[in-house]
Image (cartoon, rainbow over all chains, first blue to last red; front, side):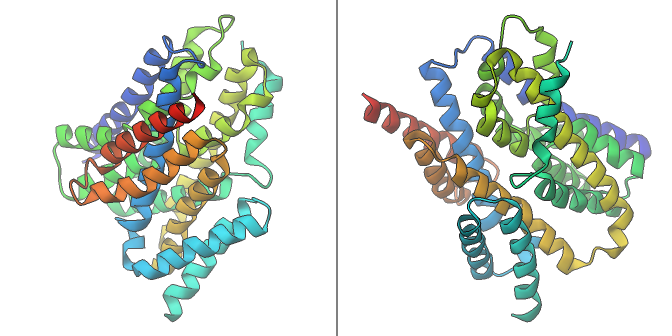
Length: 107
Length: 234
């Protein structure tokens, strides 16, 4: 089992590094002022947004035990805190964890 | 070789009001606990975060091991979920490339590309002269990567104390951090459209294919945002 785990870790890291490596290879030929660069910039942001939306709407781990509506309310309230604290990132993240724990315990 | 001044400047990005340390720490504490429950030793858990350093990839690895997937299947599943790193790298590296800098820095430091380090770099690169950006980036990468490894250890050691309610609290921190960072990044029409359309289309494509929804949804959303943004500029 122990060697197995090491091999699984190596396979996982190779599969991850592959995209980063190919990204640098492609980037060598792309100028930051080009249309190609702007397209990839859009793709990067949209893919990230898709990933985050998926994590919140269709979670796989412990978040899946929380009701959809509660998750939605926590996100909206935390974004509110983000604006109220003039775009501080520490307060909304801490706030989200506390309020979610409160909701999941009492609702 | 690496300019210490810029390296340290990047490294210090984990301090202050924009710090990713809490969000990053919260999710890797959860990973540390998860790996322990999977039967990893502490060395293997450290090794895993050290080498992979991409959260969704580690989660997929854990899920695949639970169902006893083959190595090929693990490779494909991890590659699919981490393929977003490709557009992210292409959208970052041209900003850092400079002829006076050696190539190995780029091929080595691309390992640091993960959502939090990437968003911080995108937010700050304009304040650094192009020649020094790669050293600044290596500083950000080293700092966020260290937080991830350190948190994995904490999660592993503390896993017995992490009950279900705490794990749920930890699980929401990272998405909230990313959502706030993305809203902060919406400074141009193209990026705003990319974020909004990606948020809608990613989950929408989930009904067609849960495995491919992030890449398909992201690709369609980003391309529409690009075309609309270019049209608007002309």
